[in-house]
Image (cartoon, rainbow, N blue to C red; front, side, top):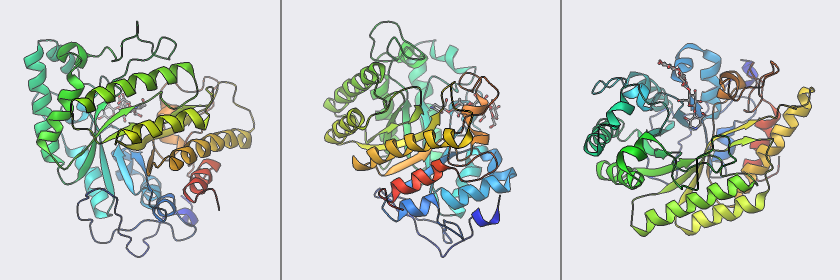
Length: 378
Ligand code: G3I
């Protein structure tokens, strides 16, 4: 990565956030020797910027590690804190990949959030059949997983996506759900019933009263009938949980935006206002931008469309009081948008939906995020 863009240790910058955080390691530093960094620009305005990280690249790729050292005040493991990574066989836990990320973060005074304690994907092969053996079995497995994981990461991971993607997709969505169910039909719902979301939140709170507990969801950002319906379903779930005094602190809005769908600030801002009125914090947890199959040939035009959407979305969230933003990776090269055949461009091109390109050059999306963090100036 070009040294002009590499992060060099600036005078230690202690990162803190409004929530109780562990003591940060000495030598905490963030930023770049030339030009600022997204983490620094955000921090100057009380915003936390971070990104999803893949531990294997932190260790093996100096340019990858340098970019995270420069820009990311907050990390979320893209894989290493999921069931398939943590408990590949029943009762056998493998925390080494997660511990490597935690150590890297600790050495640099960075924060780490957890993703995800309950999700219907990234399940190890043994888990779904085990959940199907009955409610008591399923509850015991969830309790044992939380016992181990939350105690292991205590005081290092201060907020978790306790339940990821619980809401059923409306009929027209990319993964439609039959009927008008509110909750997605998952092995967790089938094993534990519709109360599984509440159960998971209560289990997490019982194990660590200091944790920030988050429900994380996608497809709730854009100005479409399906997104409006999914927002309605999520709000109904949240109201029910809060009416029953369920421990819940925040909603994670994933932010996997798609240029094929319209985004207008008003409906999204209204949704954010409703969440805030419920007393919930809001994080943007997985921001990236999927181009359309008809993306322009011209690279600058493509990057301009991505940057424009990023700016509109992030500035709307900032105006509504959101102060934590993570992108789902930093560079297009490692992006799921490029690696996942189901979402990759079919003409051989690669999505350009993250702040850096595949050669670690800052893109207009990087600048758009920086401008949004600076309040639209700069
Ligand atoms: O399976 C190997 C595993 O054996 C190995 O130890 C590990 C080493 O990193 O790699 C694993 O490979 C793949 C992994 O990504 C690599 O990071 C998995 O096969 C593959 O399924 C996994 O895909 C991830 C996917 O979630 C499922 O967990 C994507 O990278 C990740 O970007 C994607 O992220 C999700 C969020 O968690 C939730 N929101 C949507 C988002 C995009 O789908």
